[in-house]
Length: 350
Image: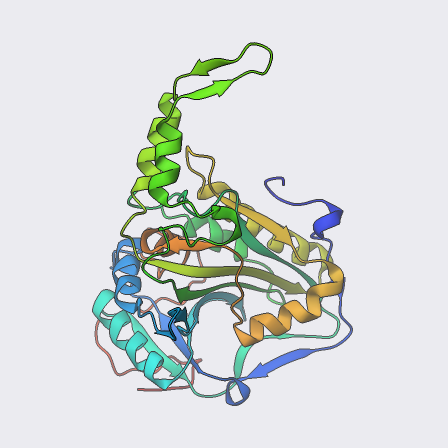
């Protein structure tokens, strides 16, 4: 799969019209939608990791300890010419926990319940639609770039949010749905792709000498790159993890803008989270025939098992409240250190 696209077999970024509108209002939305106005002086990804660590609450049932944990979402919207941040909580209890955790991790950042209006940017019948879902290039035992691993030269949200900026009539959404994974997610219960291997098994295999060649078999020592990859994989052991879905949607009366924004935002994710182990995000454009169902999935904040688990550090890089390092214009920042004021264009309750 290429950096900025995919072939027609798996769909393409060619925008199409759906000939019907899609509207979701707050009163028709299950769960609780929380708006976030970031205060610039925070630690960005580091604070995001602290918040996610505190939200890792696994619930199981039955003799097989089936994971029945709730799923929630973190969302970036470019809508009405502003970049906005939201969290969607599965219920009131989770919403209250989110508000406390955000307040603890991101001091002076404003979190408010969205009481009225839209719970998702409106999609009009004459809009052109393009979108994508993100997956991992390799099994999730190999981590994507994160602040505790290879690190970032700068917050990748600077590039992501810049790509989201568009014309006044265009809307762009990045939705990250996350669900706590059981604590044994690195112990060989990793789905079809893990073959029952744990992170220790994978690391041992990377460090082992290998027999190569059919006609003249010979032993090849593990390379420096393989040994370094083994060290990286081993660092996943003991980390909290989250089952993750990542979606990108662009809607615009301008066909070119819809295509460019969907492709461009996906491209920022596929470019800036790569590691020396060749792990990173890949983009899967949504086929034209599936785009109506894709919007329904976004509205529902649906979680599905896409064989992607991200550790707390990894998820924090992909879903966090940014800080002043981000110079993108049109972000709905909060500038005051005191609470109590209501945003001029928001409906909320404290």
